[in-house]
Image 1: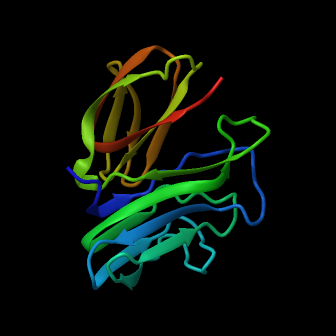
Image 2 (image 1 turned 135 degrees about the vertical axis):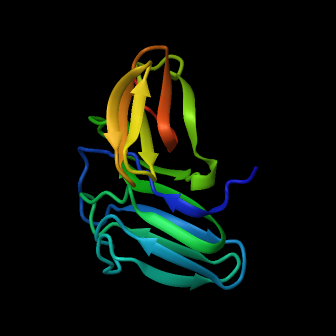
Length: 189
């Protein structure tokens, strides 16, 4: 199994308290083959002037990268959509996220994104040892995706929407009606 694919939906940790000019949320696409055509639909305005929900295309050569950054720190790129004709790797992050919110110093965080073909429908989650809790973010590519935590319906999502909840119990079981990406962000404490 490799962490490369042809379709992605971006997920980013949402640091709610730190906003500043020059501090960006971002994602980077890495081409694995020559003449890779990548269609990008950002979820927010970008530094380079692309508009939300307007698809544009770039062509990359093997080893070449393409960086997309939010126009400012208040904008969230979660839900941005990427489709390519050849497999690519995608990394998403935040230049200065407060993890956990309320922290007085920020961290540059980056995480490789899972391609849509690697998403699942059943997740056994455990809280990080020694921490007070973690944040779980689930993102879908399908309309009417039911999210159940420990058997209880907690949300119904549409395409490219995310649901985030705080995991404070030692473990939880998540089941969804359609495949989702599931990311865990350590809360700290």
